[in-house]
Every structure is written in structure tokens, then in C-alpha cells.
Amino acid sequence: RTHHLAVIGGDGIGPDVTAAALAGVRAAADRYGFAVETTDFDLGAEAYLRSGVALDEAALAELRRHDAILLGAVGDPRVPPGVLERGLIVALRVAFAQSVNVRPVRLYPGVRSPVVGVSPENCDLVIVRENTEGLYAGGGSTSHPGTPNAVAIQNSITTVAATTEAVEFAFRLAAARRKRLTLCHKKNILVHAGQLWQDVVDEVATRYPDVEHDYVHADALCLHLPLDPGRFDVVVTDNLFGDILSDLGATVQGGLGVAASANQNPRGTAPSMYEPVHGSAPDIAGKGWANPAAAALSAALCLAGLGERDAALALEAAAASVLAEMPALSGPSMGGDTTAIGDRIAKRVTDVDP
Ligand code: NAI
Ligand code: MG
Image (cartoon, rainbow, N blue to C red; front, side):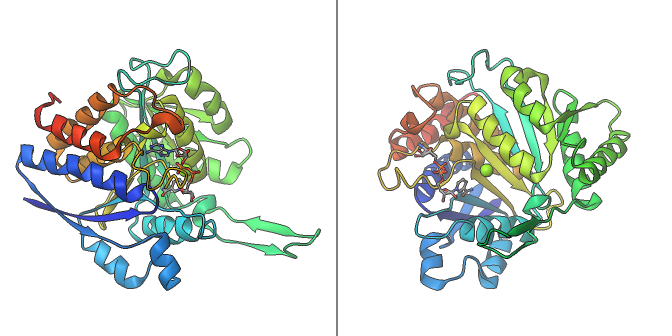
């Protein structure tokens, strides 16, 4: 069997960490007897500065023909904020109905969490973020911009359809894990959207009688997550809260060097997209220092999404085992030699016991 991967290396450290992660994917393919074919896409800052377009219909159509997309990172100081993040990443999430963003928050043995008391035994949860709606759905307007009378309106959209897709996904995941689901919102203030989320959770819960569920406000969750991560199994939440919480989760699990994510289309009607949580890191771009482990862990999520479970477990275990050999993993000092770490992960894939 052959899997066709679209590869968007993107900007800054993106292409380097993606190439290193692909070495691990190829090693896993060799070990488990499948083939991987890749197509590189020239998207990101350089392409935008050349053409003035972040993503066109032709690229979308070409990407759609692939089984999955691996993304490095986009973002460049020469491009105004939002152009690539909205015009490329958010556009792909919406175009390909990647309605859930899955972010595992797991502390691997040997990786140091900067938060006191967090250990591999109590830190293994998954944040499931609705990925296409909420405040990020984007509508809005500003009247009298740039004046003392300026008023900005930023709309938020919450539909039962998209919310149900995220909540169903989260319950299914919880049923396969420790059977606990937490809804995170701010329903005491955002009463319309919050009640819709609660209604959907209550309705879907009737189909998962083994999964217990509770509710925690988003601000309270920021308090509980670092102090007591073991309290959570699957956290389901909206787009904005999920974005913020998953960066908090990245810190709890040892930093951006280990944080992976999947933008999933749960119905399989278009390719899902896998990317490390970190950005393009312009401060270290081109130096070859970036840690590719988060990209490799994202590629492991990709293999799982393609149905290659054993290969996914082997790549995850290999990345975790190499991470345990690296000293400091949070902050700018978390880097090393991108290619050497990638090669070490790839080599470990061949003999690790997943
Ligand atoms: P960033 O994640 O790129 O970097 C934050 C800090 O962590 C920097 O000091 C960087 O050197 C370091 N760092 C990040 N990943 C690393 C790695 N793998 N190994 C070693 N060190 C690493 O976040 P920042 O600086 O806020 O954003 C830079 C650009 O990336 C911006 O244009 C931003 O919009 C974009 N961005 C893109 C994302 C994406 O493509 N999904 C996600 C986050 C930011
Ligand atoms: Mg974010």
C-alpha cells in the first residue's frame, strides 16, 4: 500500500523540521512494509511575496488529491500578521473541513516539565479543539478605524453541526482512553454559545454511557491544568479557548519541542493536516538548531490517521526515546542539530519496542 503525502515545509525552521520528520516516516514505512510518496508544495512567505496570493484554487485542488498533509510552519517578519496564518492555515482547515484539532498533552519520561509536580504518571491528556468556528470564523467590522471613536465588532459563530462533530470525536476518543470528558467553555458569560456546547455534550453523552463528563470554565481550567493535569483525560473546547489552552498544555508537557497537533477531517471527505504546535522561529531559522521532535510526533499522528497504527507507535516511541536523551527542552535552548536528531529518531524507529 502507498500513502500520498502533501508536504508544506513553509517558512523559517518549517522545511528543516519537516524533512527530519519525514526521515522517521520513511523508516517506519520500511519497517512496517508500506510506501510513502511525497509532493512538495511551495507555499508560505516566499511564495506569497512572489505572487501576492497565500493559497490559490489550483494548489487547493492539488492538495486535495493527497491522503494527508504535513505542514512545518508558516510566518515571516516580512509578511503582515494574519496573511499566512489566516490565508493559508485557517483557509486549509476550513476548505478541508478539518473540524477538530487534536493536541495530545503528554509528558514523556525523561522530558522535564517546567511545572512542579507534573510527571509522566499524571500528565496524559488530549485537548480536542473545534477548528473552524467560534471567534476564528472571522466575520467582523471596524467603524471609524484609527480614531478615538473606533468600534470593532468581531463575530463568533457556533453551529450544532460543527460542535457535534468535535464533541462526537472527543467522546469516541475518551471511550478508547480513560473514559472521562471535560467540556471547557465560559457558559456563565458567553451564554448563547456556551449553552449550545452544553446541549450538544448532553445529547452526545447519551450515546456514550461509559464515559463520564463534567464541565469546567476556561479560566478555571488554566488554573487546574498545570496544578493537576491528571484530573483530565479528554478536554473538548471551542476554537479560541482550545488555541490558548493547548499552548498552556505545551508548557506543561515540556515545551514547544514536544508539542504535536493534528487538524482532522473526521469524516474523511478531504485530507487531514498534521503540524507541530510551534511556529517558524525566525530567530533561529537557517541555523540548523531547531528540534524536529515535535514535527516527528506530528508525523506519528499522521501515520495513525492513515491507519498505520504500529508505525505511528514506533515513530512516537522513537521520538520520545530520543527526547529523553536531550537535556533542556523548553525555551530557545531546546534546539540541537536538526538533521542529527532527525536521523537519530529515524534510526531508533527501526529497532524501538513500541
Ligand atoms: P515560534 O514557535 O516560532 O518560536 C517561539 C520560540 O521558540 C523562539 O525562541 C524559537 O526559536 C523557539 N522554537 C520554536 N520551535 C522550536 C524548535 N522546534 N526548536 C528550537 N526552538 C524552537 O513562535 P513565534 O516566534 O511567536 O512566531 C514566529 C512566527 O511563526 C510568527 O510569524 C507566527 O505567526 C508563526 N506561527 C506559525 C504557526 C504555524 O505555522 N502553525 C504557529 C505559531 C506561530
Ligand atoms: Mg496557537
